[in-house]
Length: 157
Length: 307
Ligand SMILES: [Zn+2]
Image 1 (tube, rainbow over the protein chains, first blue to last red):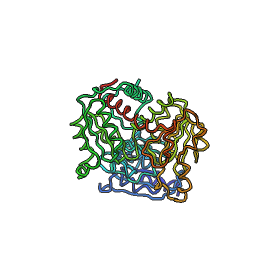
Image 2 (image 1 turned 45 degrees about the vertical axis):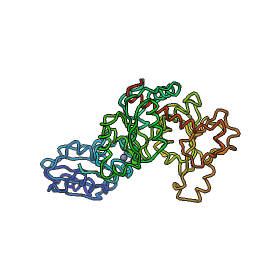
Image 3 (image 1 turned 30 degrees about the vertical axis):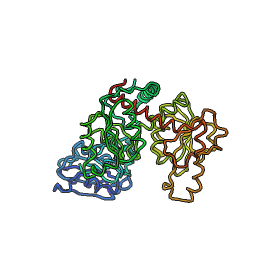
Image 4 (image 1 turned 90 degrees about the vertical axis):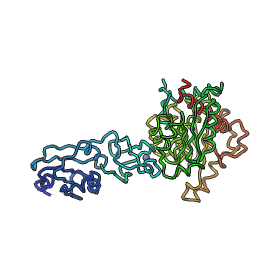
């Protein structure tokens, strides 16, 4: 792919957000996680795009939506390498990386089926105990430690 | 300095600092020497046992009664009515309005933590599934210190199912405060999980892993035996091959140190043969008795009647 084309891919929306460098295979999870599918926003998804750094990557473009900082940071647990581009009038006006927070509340369900949080309707709470690869989270209830790959379900934001 | 204990919850051994632990042990030691039959007069403990554990329940209840307090509660047999839809959260919120302190046992992991969010009254975790059972760990530490006169510089062997055994996980987590040398003796498939090993490494605790106890038994101060359950083995031949190497018999004890003591969280099945009971090394019944003093100490501290 030429540099020209690549640029087009990222910035070809007028206003909105481009989430770039999503781990290949996770784009649909990101859309589900952001709970935007019924929002009537125009969403463009790129799957298995070539990437120099990652080999393959996914990409999501959402028109007329600027994500909040909280949404972006919560997203970090699902797409830790993601770059977020805020687009205004076809130009990237802000570009930054999601920052992995110290803890996440109500973002993921606990992968431990014997955890009380899977049996009563309560907000899940995890501490992020390792922010580098592999990201590790610890359930505040069952005290079990999980890696990102162990996470089976993300809740809607 | 230990943190203020009044109205605290005892959910996980990892919530307790070294000075917290030492303070509880000191108070328990005092109570073992000098009973306080009127200390908790007028206080009520609820023992909420959503899962049967007769020994743990009786130990909590006796501890409360020995301090002059009263006991209410339920055990698994009565739980059927609760199971008709009421959440743990609601149940504990209501019971918290009736009593001064709650001892809780529940089959699900994290139940005690959730219970502590439902009420302002102190919750004592009497076991939440495979997760934590902090009063067991405290009574183990109390017992080690009692029979060895110290907690530091000891050689301790943990034997049996180290992978699934909640008791040995919590004990290992607590022992990081005391600079012990650990010998982890288990079949390879049932060795200590990595997250516990990481904790040991991080704390600079020396440990080694072994598949049988013969080579280790003569140099340790404590052998902590646990049960290996046949169901844990997918390979039954492997189980048959290994089961006998995890049974402690008198013949193993010929060359052990004079002061070596054997512990076990009980109930045992066959992992310590009954003739070991008569040797001076057997300490597991004393260990079970010590649960009473440790639980008394916790009740007195949480209710603000002891400092
Ligand atoms: Zn959990």
